[in-house]
Each structure stands twice: as structure tokens, then as C-alpha cells.
Length: 195
Ligand SMILES: [Fe+2]
Ligand SMILES: [Fe+2]
Image (cartoon, rainbow, N blue to C red; front, side, top):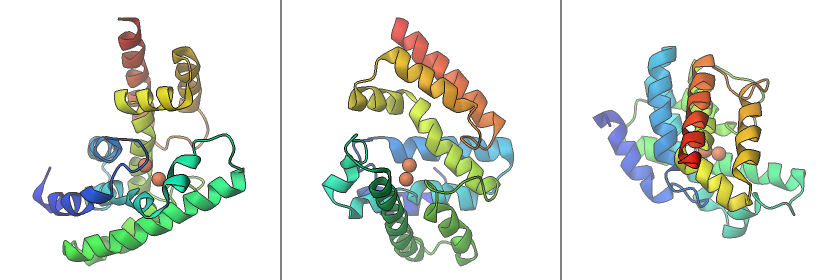
């Protein structure tokens, strides 16, 4: 990772992957780098948003962090938890970016992406698009797909078909390049499954 991102990566590390989703931050950051190249999005904004988007989960209770996967929770309660993790991520991101002496001119754009990365309808900018596409691509990656399978007790075919349908859902992905990666990843999951 380039030096300018290393500092925030290290400062954020203790707050990452707090939802039984080991590898999430790393994989989302990697897809963000890749999509920035393809879509010519500003890495300085998108990569910082990717690294810092979910660190707020660390400030929520264990119950809040994991309940969101349960079927017991109402949509309203789930929405509240989502808002809370976004707000906490922004607060922590502010501290980390300041400590890392990250260029202040990008703060506003970074916080804007983080503040509604799970709840915004549609996309604000290319940077918002690549970061949030990368967040979704996690679910198509080997680790993310496996985490979804075991946590929900889904069969392979059920999850495969669900994720395949999501690819073409309106406003699910911002970019066709992300849709292509998602299709490719699903083929990889199918191949691993039948090996
Ligand atoms: Fe999130
Ligand atoms: Fe995420």
C-alpha cells in the first residue's frame, strides 16, 4: 500500500472487521483501488473512505453489531443501527485523518461518502460509486461469500442466485465494471464449490 494510505490503515486497524467479517476492510480497500483505476475516480478520497467506512462498528455493542443479521430485528431498528455505525465511523475517521495529517481539503468528500455509505439511495460521485461498489463486492469475494453462507445457513445455490439477481438490481452497483467483477467472482465461487 502506498505510504500516504499506510498511516491511516495502521491507525484504523484496531477498529476494523468488528462484525465477524475478518478481511472486510482489506478486501473493500483492494477493490476500491482496482475500481479507481478503471473508473478514473480520485483515489485520495475513495481509498480513505474505504479504509474508514466501517470503523464505527467498533463503537457499537456486540448485540447491535451482530443482531443486524438476525431475523428478529425490525426494519426500523436495523435502520437505526446502520445510521449509528455510519455516524460513529465519521467521528473516528475525523480523529484518524487529523492524526495522520491527511490533506484537509478531502475531508468533506470522505465524510460525505462514509456518512451514508449504507443508507444512501443512488450515488453522489465516482468516488462514492467505487467505494460502495467495492463494499458490495466483498459479498462476492471468497471470504465474504463464505461468511454469508455460514452465518445465514444458506445453501450454495440459494446464495449464488440471490447474489446473481442483485447484480442487475437498480442502484445496487454504480458501475458496469463492478458488475463484471461480481459476475467473474460468482463464477469463481461456483468453480470452488464444484471442486
Ligand atoms: Fe457499513
Ligand atoms: Fe462495509
